[in-house]
Image (cartoon, rainbow, N blue to C red; front, top):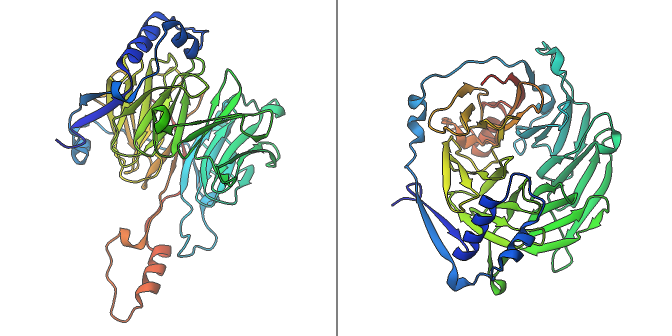
Length: 446
Protein backbone atom coordinates (compact mmCIF):
# COMPACT_ATOMS: atom_id res chain seq x y z
CA UNK A 1 0.00 0.00 0.00
CA UNK A 2 1.40 3.38 -1.01
CA UNK A 3 2.21 6.22 1.33
CA UNK A 4 -0.77 8.25 0.13
CA UNK A 5 -3.14 5.37 0.77
CA UNK A 6 -2.10 4.79 4.35
CA UNK A 7 -0.88 7.48 6.75
CA UNK A 8 1.01 6.57 9.89
CA UNK A 9 0.75 8.51 13.12
CA UNK A 10 3.37 7.65 15.73
CA UNK A 11 2.49 8.75 19.24
CA UNK A 12 3.85 8.17 22.72
CA UNK A 13 2.56 6.31 25.75
CA UNK A 14 -1.16 5.44 25.36
CA UNK A 15 -1.76 6.19 29.05
CA UNK A 16 -0.31 9.67 28.58
CA UNK A 17 -2.50 10.19 25.51
CA UNK A 18 -5.59 9.08 27.42
CA UNK A 19 -4.78 11.53 30.18
CA UNK A 20 -4.27 14.39 27.73
CA UNK A 21 -7.58 13.54 26.06
CA UNK A 22 -9.30 13.73 29.45
CA UNK A 23 -7.74 17.12 30.04
CA UNK A 24 -9.06 18.46 26.71
CA UNK A 25 -12.54 17.03 27.21
CA UNK A 26 -12.90 18.24 30.81
CA UNK A 27 -11.23 21.63 30.47
CA UNK A 28 -13.50 24.57 29.50
CA UNK A 29 -12.68 26.91 26.61
CA UNK A 30 -10.81 29.34 28.83
CA UNK A 31 -7.99 27.50 30.57
CA UNK A 32 -5.74 29.07 33.16
CA UNK A 33 -3.73 26.03 34.22
CA UNK A 34 -0.70 25.08 32.18
CA UNK A 35 -0.38 21.61 30.60
CA UNK A 36 2.50 20.79 32.96
CA UNK A 37 0.25 21.45 36.00
CA UNK A 38 -2.53 19.37 34.52
CA UNK A 39 -0.15 16.54 33.74
CA UNK A 40 1.26 16.71 37.26
CA UNK A 41 -2.25 16.32 38.71
CA UNK A 42 -2.77 13.23 36.59
CA UNK A 43 0.44 11.60 37.88
CA UNK A 44 1.48 10.33 34.49
CA UNK A 45 4.81 8.53 34.30
CA UNK A 46 7.41 9.38 31.68
CA UNK A 47 6.88 7.26 28.55
CA UNK A 48 9.49 4.74 27.55
CA UNK A 49 10.49 3.31 24.23
CA UNK A 50 8.82 -0.01 25.00
CA UNK A 51 5.45 1.67 25.62
CA UNK A 52 5.34 3.60 22.34
CA UNK A 53 2.55 2.68 19.93
CA UNK A 54 1.66 3.30 16.32
CA UNK A 55 -1.73 4.35 15.00
CA UNK A 56 -2.54 3.92 11.31
CA UNK A 57 -5.14 6.14 9.69
CA UNK A 58 -6.51 5.14 6.29
CA UNK A 59 -6.86 8.02 3.84
CA UNK A 60 -8.19 7.95 0.29
CA UNK A 61 -5.59 7.95 -2.45
CA UNK A 62 -5.28 11.37 -4.07
CA UNK A 63 -5.66 11.99 -7.78
CA UNK A 64 -4.55 15.58 -8.10
CA UNK A 65 -4.36 15.41 -11.90
CA UNK A 66 -8.16 15.17 -12.11
CA UNK A 67 -8.93 17.56 -9.27
CA UNK A 68 -10.01 20.36 -11.58
CA UNK A 69 -12.56 18.09 -13.26
CA UNK A 70 -14.15 17.32 -9.89
CA UNK A 71 -14.90 20.95 -9.07
CA UNK A 72 -18.43 22.14 -9.67
CA UNK A 73 -17.38 25.61 -10.84
CA UNK A 74 -14.36 27.89 -11.03
CA UNK A 75 -14.97 31.52 -10.25
CA UNK A 76 -13.25 34.39 -12.00
CA UNK A 77 -11.99 37.33 -10.02
CA UNK A 78 -10.18 40.55 -10.83
CA UNK A 79 -7.50 41.84 -8.45
CA UNK A 80 -8.06 45.20 -6.79
CA UNK A 81 -4.35 45.96 -6.77
CA UNK A 82 -1.21 44.43 -8.29
CA UNK A 83 2.29 45.11 -6.99
CA UNK A 84 5.02 43.97 -9.37
CA UNK A 85 7.64 46.59 -10.26
CA UNK A 86 9.25 46.33 -6.80
CA UNK A 87 10.13 42.72 -7.57
CA UNK A 88 11.64 43.22 -11.03
CA UNK A 89 15.41 42.85 -11.17
CA UNK A 90 17.14 45.77 -12.94
CA UNK A 91 19.77 43.50 -14.52
CA UNK A 92 18.88 39.79 -14.47
CA UNK A 93 21.80 37.35 -14.49
CA UNK A 94 22.00 33.58 -14.99
CA UNK A 95 22.58 33.13 -11.25
CA UNK A 96 19.66 35.36 -10.28
CA UNK A 97 17.24 35.74 -13.13
CA UNK A 98 14.05 36.08 -11.11
CA UNK A 99 13.14 37.81 -7.86
CA UNK A 100 10.28 35.53 -6.88
CA UNK A 101 8.13 36.04 -3.80
CA UNK A 102 8.26 33.76 -0.76
CA UNK A 103 5.19 34.85 1.14
CA UNK A 104 3.18 37.84 2.33
CA UNK A 105 1.61 38.72 5.69
CA UNK A 106 -0.81 41.42 6.77
CA UNK A 107 0.14 43.34 9.89
CA UNK A 108 -2.01 42.63 12.98
CA UNK A 109 -3.69 46.04 12.63
CA UNK A 110 -4.27 45.53 8.89
CA UNK A 111 -2.58 48.74 7.72
CA UNK A 112 0.58 47.22 6.21
CA UNK A 113 1.56 44.22 4.13
CA UNK A 114 4.94 42.51 4.62
CA UNK A 115 6.57 40.51 1.80
CA UNK A 116 9.62 38.27 1.46
CA UNK A 117 11.45 37.79 -1.84
CA UNK A 118 14.49 36.06 -3.29
CA UNK A 119 16.68 39.19 -3.16
CA UNK A 120 16.82 38.73 0.64
CA UNK A 121 14.62 41.75 1.25
CA UNK A 122 11.56 42.24 3.38
CA UNK A 123 9.31 44.98 2.02
CA UNK A 124 6.57 46.86 3.85
CA UNK A 125 3.68 48.26 1.80
CA UNK A 126 1.05 50.63 3.12
CA UNK A 127 -2.15 49.44 1.46
CA UNK A 128 -4.98 52.02 1.29
CA UNK A 129 -7.73 49.50 1.97
CA UNK A 130 -10.41 52.21 1.92
CA UNK A 131 -9.46 53.36 -1.60
CA UNK A 132 -9.17 50.11 -3.52
CA UNK A 133 -9.05 49.44 -6.41
CA UNK A 134 -6.06 51.51 -7.50
CA UNK A 135 -4.88 51.92 -11.07
CA UNK A 136 -1.27 52.38 -10.05
CA UNK A 137 1.52 50.30 -8.62
CA UNK A 138 2.76 51.10 -5.12
CA UNK A 139 6.30 51.51 -3.87
CA UNK A 140 7.35 49.86 -0.65
CA UNK A 141 7.59 52.34 2.21
CA UNK A 142 10.33 50.28 3.83
CA UNK A 143 13.06 47.92 2.60
CA UNK A 144 14.66 45.61 5.15
CA UNK A 145 17.80 44.06 3.67
CA UNK A 146 19.17 40.83 5.09
CA UNK A 147 22.66 39.58 4.17
CA UNK A 148 21.59 36.01 3.43
CA UNK A 149 18.63 33.81 2.53
CA UNK A 150 15.62 34.61 4.74
CA UNK A 151 14.21 31.55 6.50
CA UNK A 152 11.23 33.06 8.31
CA UNK A 153 9.67 36.42 9.13
CA UNK A 154 6.96 37.56 11.54
CA UNK A 155 5.16 40.68 12.67
CA UNK A 156 5.18 41.45 16.38
CA UNK A 157 1.78 40.02 17.46
CA UNK A 158 0.70 43.20 19.28
CA UNK A 159 1.78 45.53 16.48
CA UNK A 160 -0.23 48.78 16.32
CA UNK A 161 0.80 51.44 13.83
CA UNK A 162 -0.35 54.20 16.19
CA UNK A 163 2.16 53.04 18.82
CA UNK A 164 5.72 53.11 17.55
CA UNK A 165 7.01 50.96 20.42
CA UNK A 166 4.99 48.01 19.07
CA UNK A 167 5.95 48.29 15.39
CA UNK A 168 8.53 45.55 15.01
CA UNK A 169 9.35 42.82 12.52
CA UNK A 170 11.32 39.67 13.34
CA UNK A 171 13.46 38.02 10.69
CA UNK A 172 15.76 35.02 10.57
CA UNK A 173 18.31 34.46 7.81
CA UNK A 174 21.13 32.05 7.07
CA UNK A 175 24.30 32.32 9.21
CA UNK A 176 22.88 35.23 11.20
CA UNK A 177 21.05 35.78 14.49
CA UNK A 178 17.37 36.63 14.61
CA UNK A 179 16.96 40.33 13.85
CA UNK A 180 14.36 42.68 15.28
CA UNK A 181 13.65 45.48 12.79
CA UNK A 182 12.02 48.79 13.59
CA UNK A 183 9.02 48.99 11.23
CA UNK A 184 9.23 52.80 11.26
CA UNK A 185 12.92 53.33 10.46
CA UNK A 186 14.06 49.96 9.11
CA UNK A 187 16.93 49.80 11.60
CA UNK A 188 17.93 46.63 13.44
CA UNK A 189 17.00 47.28 17.07
CA UNK A 190 18.05 43.96 18.58
CA UNK A 191 19.55 40.55 17.81
CA UNK A 192 18.84 37.18 19.38
CA UNK A 193 21.80 34.83 19.12
CA UNK A 194 22.09 31.07 19.39
CA UNK A 195 25.25 28.96 19.44
CA UNK A 196 25.88 25.28 18.88
CA UNK A 197 28.11 22.99 20.94
CA UNK A 198 31.17 24.36 19.10
CA UNK A 199 30.25 27.94 20.05
CA UNK A 200 29.37 28.65 16.42
CA UNK A 201 26.52 30.99 15.56
CA UNK A 202 23.51 29.11 14.17
CA UNK A 203 20.47 30.52 12.40
CA UNK A 204 16.83 29.91 13.30
CA UNK A 205 14.69 28.24 10.63
CA UNK A 206 11.33 29.19 12.16
CA UNK A 207 9.84 31.79 14.49
CA UNK A 208 6.85 31.72 16.84
CA UNK A 209 5.49 33.75 19.76
CA UNK A 210 4.17 32.51 23.09
CA UNK A 211 1.83 35.35 24.03
CA UNK A 212 1.40 34.46 27.70
CA UNK A 213 5.11 34.71 28.53
CA UNK A 214 6.07 37.16 25.79
CA UNK A 215 8.82 34.86 24.58
CA UNK A 216 10.08 34.32 21.06
CA UNK A 217 10.51 30.63 20.22
CA UNK A 218 12.83 29.60 17.39
CA UNK A 219 13.30 26.28 15.63
CA UNK A 220 16.76 24.91 14.82
CA UNK A 221 18.19 21.55 13.83
CA UNK A 222 16.65 19.21 16.45
CA UNK A 223 16.54 22.07 18.99
CA UNK A 224 13.95 24.64 20.06
CA UNK A 225 15.22 27.77 21.77
CA UNK A 226 13.33 30.51 23.61
CA UNK A 227 14.32 34.18 23.84
CA UNK A 228 13.10 36.98 26.07
CA UNK A 229 12.05 39.67 23.58
CA UNK A 230 12.83 42.44 26.04
CA UNK A 231 16.34 41.11 26.72
CA UNK A 232 18.26 40.68 23.43
CA UNK A 233 21.21 38.34 23.36
CA UNK A 234 21.46 34.62 24.12
CA UNK A 235 18.48 32.35 24.65
CA UNK A 236 16.85 31.87 28.03
CA UNK A 237 16.13 28.21 27.42
CA UNK A 238 16.68 25.42 24.90
CA UNK A 239 15.28 21.93 24.48
CA UNK A 240 16.38 19.05 22.29
CA UNK A 241 13.68 17.55 20.10
CA UNK A 242 15.73 14.43 19.46
CA UNK A 243 17.41 12.86 22.47
CA UNK A 244 17.67 9.08 22.40
CA UNK A 245 18.89 8.85 25.97
CA UNK A 246 15.78 10.63 27.28
CA UNK A 247 13.30 9.02 24.85
CA UNK A 248 12.60 12.22 22.88
CA UNK A 249 12.07 11.48 19.21
CA UNK A 250 11.46 14.31 16.77
CA UNK A 251 14.34 14.56 14.34
CA UNK A 252 15.13 17.08 11.62
CA UNK A 253 15.11 20.86 11.32
CA UNK A 254 12.19 22.52 13.12
CA UNK A 255 10.61 24.35 10.19
CA UNK A 256 7.48 25.91 11.73
CA UNK A 257 5.88 26.61 15.11
CA UNK A 258 2.35 27.28 16.33
CA UNK A 259 1.04 27.93 19.86
CA UNK A 260 -2.27 26.82 21.33
CA UNK A 261 -4.11 29.95 22.46
CA UNK A 262 -6.33 28.03 24.90
CA UNK A 263 -3.70 25.92 26.64
CA UNK A 264 -0.84 28.15 27.88
CA UNK A 265 2.54 26.70 27.02
CA UNK A 266 1.30 24.06 24.58
CA UNK A 267 2.73 24.31 21.08
CA UNK A 268 3.29 22.29 17.92
CA UNK A 269 6.56 22.08 16.03
CA UNK A 270 6.78 20.92 12.42
CA UNK A 271 9.93 19.32 11.08
CA UNK A 272 11.44 18.85 7.64
CA UNK A 273 11.70 15.17 8.67
CA UNK A 274 7.92 14.92 8.01
CA UNK A 275 6.86 14.90 11.69
CA UNK A 276 4.89 17.19 14.01
CA UNK A 277 5.77 17.32 17.69
CA UNK A 278 3.19 18.32 20.31
CA UNK A 279 4.86 19.84 23.37
CA UNK A 280 3.06 20.15 26.69
CA UNK A 281 4.72 23.09 28.39
CA UNK A 282 7.35 25.77 27.90
CA UNK A 283 10.08 23.41 29.11
CA UNK A 284 9.81 21.22 26.05
CA UNK A 285 7.85 18.27 27.47
CA UNK A 286 6.98 16.07 24.49
CA UNK A 287 3.40 14.74 24.42
CA UNK A 288 3.25 13.15 20.98
CA UNK A 289 4.91 12.94 17.59
CA UNK A 290 2.51 12.85 14.63
CA UNK A 291 3.34 11.36 11.23
CA UNK A 292 0.94 11.83 8.35
CA UNK A 293 2.64 13.81 5.59
CA UNK A 294 4.78 12.52 2.74
CA UNK A 295 6.92 15.68 2.69
CA UNK A 296 8.64 17.99 5.14
CA UNK A 297 6.25 20.14 7.18
CA UNK A 298 6.19 23.77 6.02
CA UNK A 299 3.23 25.37 7.84
CA UNK A 300 1.09 24.57 10.90
CA UNK A 301 -1.64 26.47 12.73
CA UNK A 302 -3.91 25.82 15.70
CA UNK A 303 -7.61 26.64 15.62
CA UNK A 304 -8.73 29.40 18.05
CA UNK A 305 -10.50 26.87 20.29
CA UNK A 306 -7.31 24.80 20.52
CA UNK A 307 -9.06 21.57 19.52
CA UNK A 308 -7.65 21.30 15.99
CA UNK A 309 -4.25 21.59 14.37
CA UNK A 310 -3.82 22.17 10.62
CA UNK A 311 -0.62 21.21 8.81
CA UNK A 312 0.79 21.40 5.29
CA UNK A 313 3.96 20.04 3.74
CA UNK A 314 6.16 20.39 0.66
CA UNK A 315 5.53 18.11 -2.32
CA UNK A 316 2.43 16.94 -0.46
CA UNK A 317 -1.04 17.60 -1.84
CA UNK A 318 -2.84 17.55 1.51
CA UNK A 319 -3.61 19.89 4.38
CA UNK A 320 -4.38 17.69 7.38
CA UNK A 321 -6.65 18.65 10.27
CA UNK A 322 -5.64 16.85 13.48
CA UNK A 323 -7.97 16.32 16.45
CA UNK A 324 -6.14 17.49 19.58
CA UNK A 325 -8.74 15.81 21.80
CA UNK A 326 -7.86 12.45 20.30
CA UNK A 327 -4.22 12.65 19.25
CA UNK A 328 -3.57 10.65 16.12
CA UNK A 329 -7.07 11.17 14.70
CA UNK A 330 -7.28 13.04 11.38
CA UNK A 331 -10.58 14.90 11.19
CA UNK A 332 -10.34 16.31 7.66
CA UNK A 333 -8.10 16.23 4.61
CA UNK A 334 -8.04 19.21 2.24
CA UNK A 335 -6.60 18.47 -1.20
CA UNK A 336 -4.41 21.01 -2.98
CA UNK A 337 -1.63 20.95 -5.59
CA UNK A 338 1.90 21.27 -4.16
CA UNK A 339 4.63 20.06 -6.50
CA UNK A 340 7.67 21.97 -5.24
CA UNK A 341 9.80 22.16 -2.12
CA UNK A 342 8.91 25.77 -1.37
CA UNK A 343 6.72 26.85 1.51
CA UNK A 344 3.12 27.32 0.37
CA UNK A 345 1.05 29.02 3.03
CA UNK A 346 -2.58 28.64 4.04
CA UNK A 347 -4.68 30.98 6.17
CA UNK A 348 -8.08 31.31 7.84
CA UNK A 349 -10.63 34.11 7.87
CA UNK A 350 -11.12 35.98 11.20
CA UNK A 351 -14.23 33.92 12.01
CA UNK A 352 -12.26 30.71 11.37
CA UNK A 353 -14.93 29.27 9.11
CA UNK A 354 -12.95 29.28 5.85
CA UNK A 355 -9.56 27.78 5.00
CA UNK A 356 -7.75 29.35 2.02
CA UNK A 357 -4.52 28.12 0.42
CA UNK A 358 -2.28 28.69 -2.56
CA UNK A 359 -1.27 26.05 -5.11
CA UNK A 360 1.66 25.28 -7.36
CA UNK A 361 -0.59 25.75 -10.39
CA UNK A 362 -1.44 29.35 -9.44
CA UNK A 363 -4.95 28.70 -8.14
CA UNK A 364 -6.38 29.83 -4.82
CA UNK A 365 -8.60 27.27 -3.11
CA UNK A 366 -10.96 27.77 -0.17
CA UNK A 367 -13.13 25.40 1.89
CA UNK A 368 -15.56 25.47 4.73
CA UNK A 369 -13.42 24.14 7.59
CA UNK A 370 -16.06 21.50 8.33
CA UNK A 371 -16.56 20.39 4.71
CA UNK A 372 -13.33 19.52 2.87
CA UNK A 373 -15.05 17.63 0.06
CA UNK A 374 -15.93 20.58 -2.21
CA UNK A 375 -14.06 23.91 -2.38
CA UNK A 376 -16.25 26.98 -2.00
CA UNK A 377 -13.57 29.13 -3.61
CA UNK A 378 -11.40 28.41 -6.65
CA UNK A 379 -9.88 30.97 -9.00
CA UNK A 380 -6.66 31.46 -10.93
CA UNK A 381 -4.72 34.13 -9.04
CA UNK A 382 -1.34 33.94 -10.81
CA UNK A 383 0.25 32.40 -13.87
CA UNK A 384 2.88 30.95 -11.58
CA UNK A 385 2.99 29.26 -8.19
CA UNK A 386 0.80 31.03 -5.61
CA UNK A 387 2.92 30.58 -2.50
CA UNK A 388 1.73 33.33 -0.17
CA UNK A 389 -1.78 33.67 1.28
CA UNK A 390 -2.87 36.20 3.89
CA UNK A 391 -6.41 37.26 4.81
CA UNK A 392 -6.90 40.79 6.11
CA UNK A 393 -7.72 40.78 9.85
CA UNK A 394 -10.48 43.41 9.54
CA UNK A 395 -11.48 43.88 5.89
CA UNK A 396 -12.78 41.37 3.29
CA UNK A 397 -9.45 41.37 1.46
CA UNK A 398 -7.05 38.62 0.44
CA UNK A 399 -3.37 39.09 -0.38
CA UNK A 400 -1.48 36.59 -2.54
CA UNK A 401 2.14 36.37 -3.67
CA UNK A 402 3.62 34.34 -6.51
CA UNK A 403 6.77 32.96 -8.06
CA UNK A 404 9.24 30.13 -7.78
CA UNK A 405 12.82 29.34 -8.65
CA UNK A 406 12.99 28.23 -12.28
CA UNK A 407 15.76 26.85 -14.44
CA UNK A 408 16.37 26.56 -18.15
CA UNK A 409 15.51 22.87 -18.10
CA UNK A 410 11.98 23.63 -16.91
CA UNK A 411 10.69 24.23 -20.47
CA UNK A 412 11.17 22.22 -23.68
CA UNK A 413 13.62 23.89 -26.08
CA UNK A 414 15.82 23.05 -29.04
CA UNK A 415 19.40 24.19 -29.48
CA UNK A 416 21.18 24.59 -32.80
CA UNK A 417 24.52 22.90 -33.44
CA UNK A 418 26.32 26.26 -33.56
CA UNK A 419 25.30 27.39 -30.08
CA UNK A 420 27.40 26.95 -26.98
CA UNK A 421 25.38 24.92 -24.47
CA UNK A 422 26.39 26.89 -21.36
CA UNK A 423 25.72 30.31 -22.91
CA UNK A 424 22.49 29.08 -24.48
CA UNK A 425 20.97 27.92 -21.22
CA UNK A 426 22.24 31.00 -19.38
CA UNK A 427 20.52 33.29 -21.87
CA UNK A 428 17.39 31.15 -21.88
CA UNK A 429 17.19 31.18 -18.09
CA UNK A 430 17.30 34.99 -18.07
CA UNK A 431 15.02 35.86 -20.96
CA UNK A 432 12.64 33.11 -22.02
CA UNK A 433 11.27 31.28 -19.01
CA UNK A 434 7.76 32.59 -18.20
CA UNK A 435 7.49 34.04 -14.71
CA UNK A 436 5.11 36.06 -12.61
CA UNK A 437 6.57 37.60 -9.48
CA UNK A 438 4.02 39.91 -7.90
CA UNK A 439 1.61 40.56 -5.05
CA UNK A 440 -2.12 40.90 -5.66
CA UNK A 441 -4.92 42.15 -3.43
CA UNK A 442 -8.29 40.48 -4.03
CA UNK A 443 -11.82 40.94 -2.72
CA UNK A 444 -12.40 38.06 -0.31
CA UNK A 445 -15.79 36.71 -1.35
CA UNK A 446 -16.74 33.38 0.19
